[in-house]
Image (cartoon, rainbow, N blue to C red; front, side, top):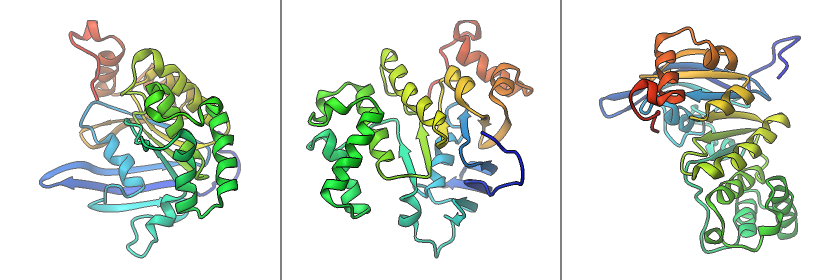
Length: 262
């Protein structure tokens, strides 16, 4: 990612974001920008607010207060057409959320036809292009139950890409996968990053964060505790809370317990 020259408008801008569920404040004042083409990985312990932050970006969760701006449009403005904004934001969840009763190809064509009003031939062309992109061109006629978890998650990524998003949000996309299937999903995400896709990724995969992220954000207790280049935050964190978390994730035996959780 190049930030040289005149400052450009961030693709995602979050200001004073707070979110409470009942009396529990899950986000306690988040300020964050993501530049166009930047990959930001969000890390932190369970319950730190990472997934809620991501879900507030496309208003799957409605913020209690604060502003979220995506692609120059204020998502949190009551007058904003949120469906129009969401069309520019792809989201990939822990669970794959595929339609089980239709083929892989139809999982990609149905949203295009319903939401983008694409004709069938165009939707099929786009679907096949993105299945090729994630290495699944030969499984277009399969049903989700016939695929491994890693393949299903790659289909979910292709489905999001078929909608031509400006931003991709990934909420722990590998946490429901068997360990041997994680690599194939991370490889697809690595390719997207290399092609300049703007990405916010909630993950426990520290190797991926260190290799691919332009910036790593460490959250704890609903706050951003530390952020910076991946090598600094993951490799040489300044904050004690960041160091403790990374010790538990990277060296669980030394930390006296299992690594992390979700």
